[in-house]
Length: 186
Image (tube, rainbow, N blue to C red; front, side, top):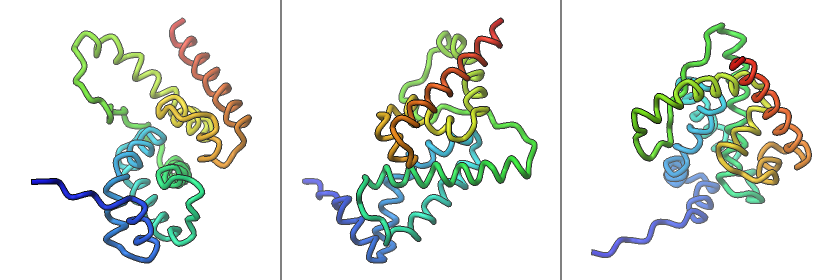
């Protein structure tokens, strides 16, 4: 039996812009993992990331009629996710002195060996902690550039900053991470 062609993403977007909740739900299903993963990497807390992902899609639904399509839908959603994560993260820091939860690997396609887990567990934990201590603008650039592999131009567009500003933030963030991690080793 031949597979039916999946509904084109552009068609779903057009239908969702017209108020079709079913089409929007399909778009949510196709982007929910990447939105949650980005929020989790920015916030380091499962519950906050889930809240940020939900709020991202609520904001996207409300703003969908104004989405011009200048950028890809995923880029637009990433920008909303970053802004939503910053807002929720600031609110959580104001209302709670709790430390960030230990990050889990969300996109690990293969189970690590016990040897590799032992070798990377300490460094991974220290790195996640150091990234979580970065100011929000620097953390966003590090996550988008170093974890997602975006170009400087893509990062700049998603964060509505210049390419130069993206490069400067990334340089400062990497320098800060290096200093923090080397200080801990000594």
